[in-house]
Each structure stands twice: as C-alpha cells, then as structure tokens.
Image (cartoon, rainbow, N blue to C red):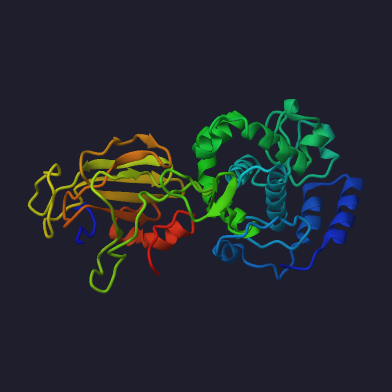
Length: 390
C-alpha cells in the first residue's frame, strides 16, 4: 500500500510522619512558605521521575498513597504533586472514573497551579494552613471556590475541595465524552473557559504516574480497561484511535524514510474520528504533482498529494493529519471538533494504491516534516493504540 509522505504543503510508607506534620500544621498560623516546607519534606531527594513512571505499561490501576513518597515532575514542586495525589485519591474513594481525575487536576492547575491558596481579602484564611495567597474575589483553595462551596476552613481543605468538585462534575450530562474545557467550565463557571485545555497533557501524565497508567484507560461496562480507546471510546487522557485497524506501512521505515506517518488499512467508507478535541486547521483537497485537485476519484501510486485531508490542532501544540478520504471531509476550517467526532471516511484519493488512512502526529504546532513523530508510541501512551506490531 502506497501513499504520500506528506501534503504538498512502591516505596516505604510515611503515614506516621504525615500524621505528625498534619497535626503541626493545624496548630500553626501558616504562611505559604511554612506549608510548602513541611509538605516538601515528604518528597525526598531520591523521589522517582514522574515522567518515567507515566511511561510505564498500563494497569492495574493503583490506589494513590497520599502519605507515601511521590514522584517528581519538572512542572511542579513536591507540595503541588501531593495536592494532585489528594485530588486523585478523593476521586478514587468516590468511585469517579479516571477521566474525572484528569479533568479535576487540569482544573486545579489552571485555578491555583495546584497550590492551596488563601486570599488577602479573606483574613480568616490567612490564619489557616495554606501555600500562597491569592486575591481573586473571595475565592480559596485548590479550585478557587467561593463561599457557596463551603466555609473558609472547608474550602482550604484540599480533600473537601476536591470532593465538592467531583460532586458537581458527575452531574454534568455525558461528561466522560465531552471536551475537558466544557466539563470544567460547567463546574467552575470561569471567565476563561478555554484555559483548562492546556493542562490536559500534564494532568494525564501525573494521573498515569500516580495511579498506574490510569489516564490510558477507558471505562467499559463499569470497568477501567487499558489501551482500548477506539470506535468513539475516549481514554481518560482525552484521546481515541482515529479508526480501528492495524498499521501497515510504518513511520519512516528503511524502504520509505520520508514517510512521515503510518498507514492504517480499512475498508472504503470506514468512519474516521478526531483523535482528540481540537480546531480544524485544514480541510481540503490536496494538489497532486501536476497541480490537479481531483480528489473525488481514486488515486494511484506516484500521483502525489494527500487527497481529501484534514489537519487538527490540539491542546499542547499537537497536530494530527488524516489523508486519502473518499469524499470531502465533514468538517471545515476553524471548526471546533470533539474527540471521537466523525470527520470523514476512509478512501483512496491522492497518492494511494488502495483504501486506508494515512495518519500523522506533529509536535510544537509544526505541520512540516520536521515536526512529525511516530504516531504508534504517541497514541499508545495515551491509551489509544493503533494496534501496530512492535
């Protein structure tokens, strides 16, 4: 099968120590520095690298040990990671599926950078344990909750704040299959609803590292199943495979070193789904080597061009590309699409010898060949494998 290379364009438990420190914190009128000092002490210089743990195989899902030693992440300090652990643990205790943990973490990342914030306009909060001081109206804590969410002391209790968030989250209709920004906004009613999306990637990595690859799972019949996000099922990470099927021609193989994606065989007319929520950058018929735009007919090897194709831009600067559609894509430039939304159908337009999907992943908002990465490990790490033999 031939197609175009690209368009022509376990650790020792520290529960006793944690309990002692918690008691000390409750007796002190803490400043941000004080709280951070005590919580950081629970990390340790020999803490494992969080990204390494996140990249390990999925399952079985682990119960988070809040009092134990936690991994480290470049983006956050020890106290912030411990707050993330509390958020995940509360979700686990409540039986909320792992997609909810990712949404909750991303929300707290945006609202407070995972810091338990007091408020300069709420004097009572300054006398309670906290990790910084904000000044947004009368908002407090990890989720910047206002008085309607609870008392000052309650809102500054990370476990309480997380529980209140989840209680509202699970009431959002269809929340597991909806974009993170939409669900978070329904709970938070923020002035900046689109800001949550940029935290989804890091939130997924933290969930994976702390809970045994849980962001790579999808809930099927009430059970968390690893690496099964396809046919419209969305992994907790927010990703899904564009079509079910196995990879034929791989990424930059010895025989095709400039093949910047993978070819997934499928019958003509198979629905193609958006791999994640995003915005349509391109939806068009790609010109062939002779400058023709005749994508409504089957192509052939050497013709050139991607045929009917779509490029989507996702949070984190990721771009996905879908080539050789049988008819004009179902989406238009600048349209917002959701993960799992059908954007077109498999065909053989452009530089192709038979029906299949040519699928690419690019990093850093770079649509060129220099931004392309192998989609097989990329999608597997997000719980939406392309079923390639490795």
